[in-house]
Length: 180
Image 1 (tube, rainbow, N blue to C red):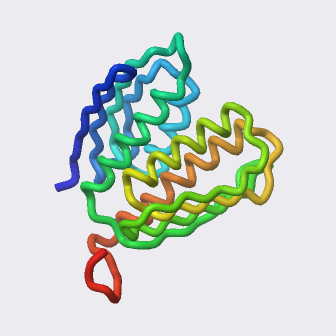
Image 2: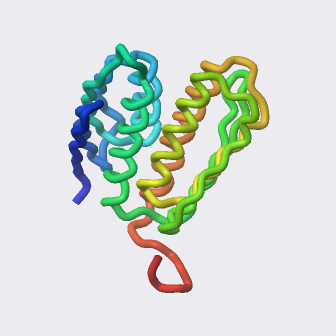
């Protein structure tokens, strides 16, 4: 089975996501956070998934809960699909050079090397940290260089899609333990 969906309704958000893991990168994403729609579409397009994502949230307060809850939903959703265990890749886009590595090991660890966090980078960190907690993976994000923050965030989400495109190649986990 390659189509999965999840719905999460809290006092702060109402989210519905449906993903076809054998898709072609088609998407319909509506969060009312236009930049988030843009970077999530990069993830879906580069991951070659088909995705329907709808999110209603209290944007008068801030975007934090919507971003966090979408990441939680994606982590839960991706947990339903079998992936190969490891994937590491890098991307160079304009002024950005970033490395991302994921170990789908059923353990939780998140690392990035951002020392100075403005609101956008803090929200991005929250997204990937929430995703890794719910997907139960070790998630390493290392930025070697960037000048333009828009390019940085966009390239990370593109790389996130590329990583999962590579992870979905194999349909079983490889471990000397036999089970993770």
